[in-house]
Amino acid sequence: MRHFVYGFGAISRFHTRPVLFSLGLLLALAFAGNALGATAVPLGAAATFGALSSTAMTNAGSNTVVHGNIGSSTSIGAGVTHPGFGAYGAGSSQLANAQASLLTAYGAAAAATPDQPTITGANLAGKTLVPGVYNSTSSILISGPTPLTLDGGGDPNAVFIFQAASFLTVDPTSSVTLTGKAQACNVFWQVGSSAFLKNTDATFNGTILALTQITLTDAITVNGRVLAQNADVTFIHDTVNTPTCTGSPPPPVDTTPPACALTATLNGPPKQIQVTVQDSGSGLGSVQVTTSTNATTVVPPFASGTTGPVVVTATKINPSTGSSVALSVTDAAGNVMKCDPILSGLTGGPRAGPVSRTFKNLVSTESRVTIVNGKPGLRGFTLKVNGKTFAVPTLADGRQVVIDVSAAMRPGHRNTITISAIGKKVSDATIAISG
Image 1 (cartoon, one colour):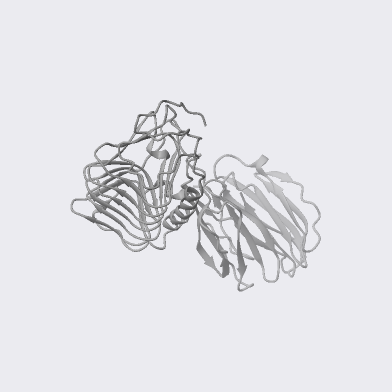
Image 2: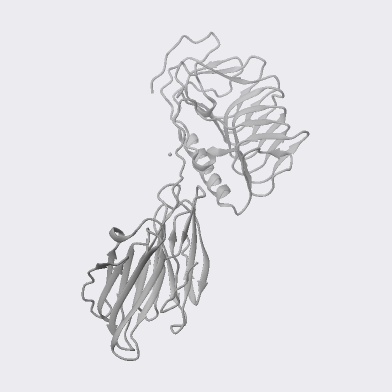
């Protein structure tokens, strides 16, 4: 980092390092009723998680494989593997965001209005169901060798929501299958208590949103997610395939780093600058102060994923010595911006006369020059960029001006800016150069 230690000193430079369906005849054992187009449950930050628990996440026997992120507030067993995905524990923003999204998703699923006949007291094994919202005022049971079939009626966007006031139980030999272009990404099981999948060596489709625990027996394949709000997730050599919807556009990938701009320079006393950071894509993840010499630098608290502006303030401690500050700003998608604008001073000499300061090797993006006149201030400012002169208006004491010099900047990092003025020893001005 270059440092121009004068006045506030070199603060640094900026560098920048997405309902219609077919009505078919139902089988004799199918439930009657029309599918009225249920809406998919918004999973938010929990969508990338295959398994999520409030307390322990455990495994017995051979490894469980989760094709998605996993997270637990207490512990994750070594046998719960997640090849190519992340594991998040207490204190991580990813886990906190996913658990908050799970709370919202659970509430949305529970609030969906049933538009199909009640399934209270029914055994769903062997039945074929059309899209819609199904409610049981007690438990949901799937028990028997004939699968529960969810028929999308040819619509890949068909949504199935099942609401259980208490338990979800899937007995041995039972399974849930899909037909008619139905997709696991659009099947949701909202469970008011615990979910028990006992169907060893069989398949279950859909995302389970359980208020308490989720327990799986041996070698079950879940095409969906197992998300427990307030208790454990227990595996025994199982497989979880986090689903995506075929034909749906993939979520946009945020590849743009956060924005960082010097937005205020205050003469004080004390002297102070304000740097505004913002990310309108995935939102801000973190703002770290990497350098703070002779300055008190304050980053206000903000929630991860915030897309609004966050203003960082740096206040000079000792007015007679130089200062430097630099920030590393990361968004929620992992893009990083290093913020280090140049901040320097221009002070009158021992006698009235011209004074100047030259800044060399500037990158082409450092094209915003801010001059803040002191009290008392300098007079007769001139500004030259690579030999081209820019007009500077007369500045009264304490006033400032911002000049865009991009028209004179050359590609690369071999740009030179010179600022001159006339003043006495006690007069000064603050100079800031940023992107």
